[in-house]
Length: 465
Image (cartoon, rainbow, N blue to C red):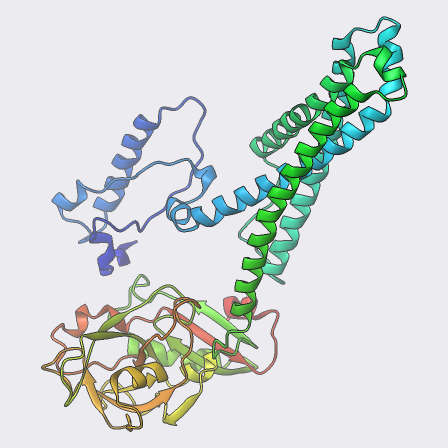
């Protein structure tokens, strides 16, 4: 815990940096529990030297939210997608219910003579409706039970696909009483809702009309209801088919997108040297030790150390000013990486060179740009190698471009024409005003490991070694 004093984000008021998950006893008031947790948390932080000032400590607080719905930040990030899935599931359920309703109506009409004879013998219409509704509810409950079995089996299959060979899967799929109750209630409601129409029509059939050859009145009522159910099915199915077609088209485009990455035999390890207590002046030696330790593992080919990896939502960007050009008014994202970074993620150098072992903290500051960076900041046909740029019009000589790499996808596959440049892990231009002790960009966030062959036990090797 004392290393938290080295992390600036704990002092940012809007940053949620600590999540606590606990179980609350029944009957406990949330307001009183929140106040008690705030007191305990402030006492724990007060025992950490130089973490908070007295005025800052008084502002530290927790927000209690129901844990069953997950972390609030994840809810905000994925709420729209989950709502879409719920609407799709609801529409599919509506189609299935309409289909079952039509089948029940046909089944009831085939039993019309039987029901009319029972009515003629003195059976009460309410009793007939009750019997037919009971059959519908039993059918709906059996369908709901089968759906729960398929749902849990499918969830287990998805977890195995998402975490192949993992010893400790972070998610557990187990029956939940609220979910079971919701499924039972939904099955009951749908059974009653789509069974009451056929039951009502059958119960109100006149015995004399039903025993005649035509039975036009009953058939007409049933026909109107059946047509309505068919129209409902067709309308909702059309909506789902259009949505599925658009989704398939979008998925096909995403699958055909060349990310300029090679995922074969690659493994990512996320690290945080800052919270581990390493200062900015210690990370250079730390990265060398990491490279040596990982290369000592059998089968390891490349060890890439970087600020963040492709497809991670952790974008850094700065203003870009090319030396000898008018102000651009544009910015570009940038990533720190070591000499093996491009090989570890599978990004190819197409001009010049990549980051090399000679690009140390004491060497001349260099940068490697991607293709979009060259297109955006240089004229067509011009050679970017040897050009200089910086993040300020007064410091355009900060970085010298020594190479150009492919447009690897970062942040999101939807982000097109993404200008980027890459700089060595610990290099800092002399014009940067902030001292090294305040430069958080030198902290690596991930290690990308490329192995010579698939290694199913890589997690255990990394943990043990």
